[in-house]
Image (cartoon, rainbow, N blue to C red; front, side, top):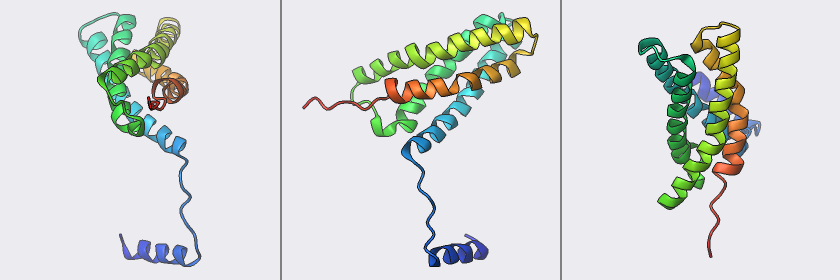
Length: 158
């Protein structure tokens, strides 16, 4: 910490100012978006390889790229975003993976395919920028599904 920052911290402490605490849902939203940002890189890389390098049509390439990102995101959400609600057993983790694919996976794949069809197929935008717009459009629905359906707290059996 620099001398200036230490002085600023001392002045703020002297007047009783404390940094406002971030609500747990807000903290989780930030983590969700961090994982999602990395997932975007995964999705765009897979899309770029499948569509740009291998010549696969943009719609099946999009579906495969989204599923790659969904699997990546699930692993990170289980261990990082919702670590406080981590699965205890493999069966619980498998159940969450199924719920994740049926909710956020379905929203992501269907939303991305629909929006890609509109943005690339109709509006003739390049696939990668269209994919970014599609991902952003699906983000809030995916967070809500994850928070309240997929990673709901594990109930104690006792």
